[in-house]
Length: 64
Image 1 (cartoon, rainbow, N blue to C red):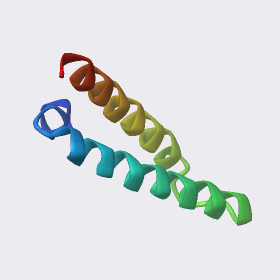
Image 2 (tube, rainbow, N blue to C red):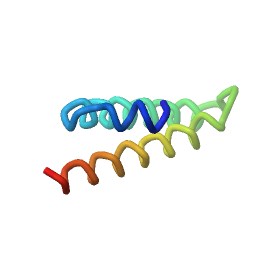
Image 3 (cartoon, rainbow, N blue to C red):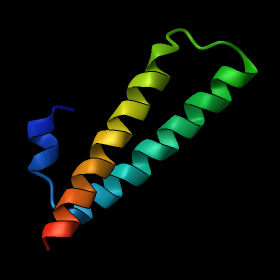
């Protein structure tokens, strides 16, 4: 997800997207703990996406 797409989301959409991405990250971590996943870089990209979403959420909530 690009930053331009993230900036186009509303506060409610950002909340939902953060929750869903955190669930995805949790599943990836569990799957990687049980047996190595095919592409472990997915964990890193998922963390970075969550960080970008939270940063955008905090910036928008500060303006409101």
